[in-house]
Structure formats: structure tokens, C-alpha cells
Image (cartoon, rainbow, N blue to C red):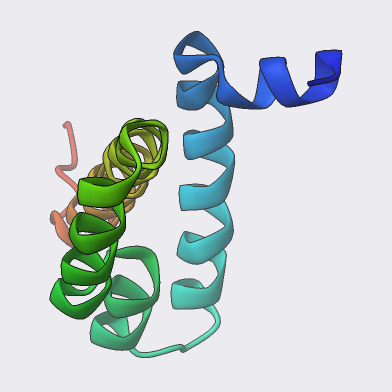
Length: 95
């Protein structure tokens, strides 16, 4: 495994990349892409989770990787949802 692969799997590096990815999807939302479609694209579908679970039962290493991917996707979705929530909040004007 080369150094780039190790860095890509480093959980400490997930947050900045997750923020960048969430920002990318937020930019698509600002440009008019449907919110639900974007959320579906970010999230891991139940069908995919089922497939990952079957594969993980045969290969523990794959299970660990699938868990990292699942956690990453959920983190991107949470950041994206926060950006959307902040966008939908009415701005308060101070006098």
C-alpha cells in the first residue's frame, strides 16, 4: 500500500475531505438540484448496506473498509444537512 492510500484511509483526514464533499453538494443545491436527490446521492442506500454486509461476512478486512465508507458517507450527509439547515434559517436583523 503506498503512502497516498494510507492517507486516504486515515480517519483523521476524513473530516476535511467530508467538509469539501458536503460543500460540493451544497453548491449543487444552490444551483437548483433537488434536495432529496442530493441526499440520496450522498447517503448509502439500504441495498448497498445489505451488499456490504454480505461481503463483510466473507472478508473481515472488507467489513472494516465498508464501515469506514459508511461512516464517511454519513458524516458528509450530516455536514450537508447542517449547511442546508443553516440556509433555511431566517436571518435575524439586529437594530
